[in-house]
Image 1 (cartoon, rainbow, N blue to C red):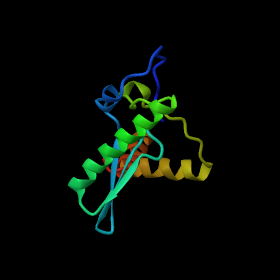
Image 2: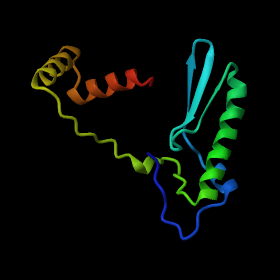
Image 3: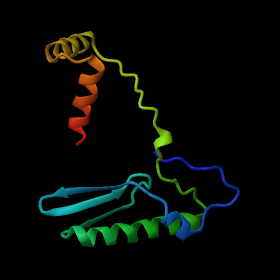
Image 4: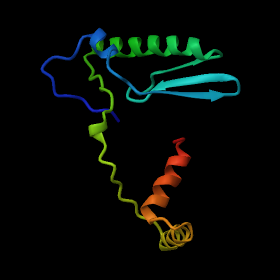
Length: 124
């Protein structure tokens, strides 16, 4: 997940709280669920999205405080430098063939077809 910088001394609680952690919010049957991607198990639920933001910040504070008190490593947020943009994917030949045919029909490169299909799937 996140990376940790090799520090002689961990950051203070308030310094960790100022870092840009990734918060995922998912609506579910009129309620909302949030989790901090880099902090396993750090999550909150609410009927109200605005309240949820406050709750997840409280959960993040408690998670980091507990980790620091226990002497555990606190993961830091992901950064753009953590990602190259390159992924090697192995797939069955039939899927490769069908993707290539679809790209030809659309008049785009195979890479462009795969990128736009993945982007649509994850909400971009």
